[in-house]
Image 1: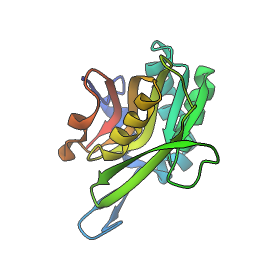
Image 2: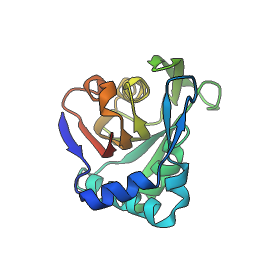
Image 3: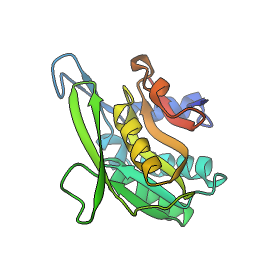
Image 4: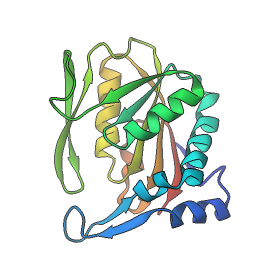
Length: 185
């Protein structure tokens, strides 16, 4: 896997972005420090900068779609898709998509969950960049990647605003896929 942490973001920009992220202790359960990016999103300069960095990194990969994982991937993904002039594919929690879906269940660092995608969201060979806000244990992004591969998509990159490197989620990402995180803790 390609390792890119805070690149092409300078240390100064990385520290600035980190300063816009709020820590929420003991959420969603005791012992977890939740990295809340809603404070980054409300900072217009930080939000724009993150979208610019993602768009610059992914543009040469020529994706057909950006796929975003519910919920914060729904904020980031469409903004990146707009910048790259490509479509957007939502990956949702169960019962939210109105058409025929395929499902994937996975382990979270604090429980289990399931994701769904429309069975016809992409076709064989479609180049897709997958976006989420945070890489922790890798369960969510791994499940979303599996869903997209089941419908024939080629995952050209998986992008995150934040990576919690100490949880080892990068090791669970698909072999040979570009993994791009702007900030790493």
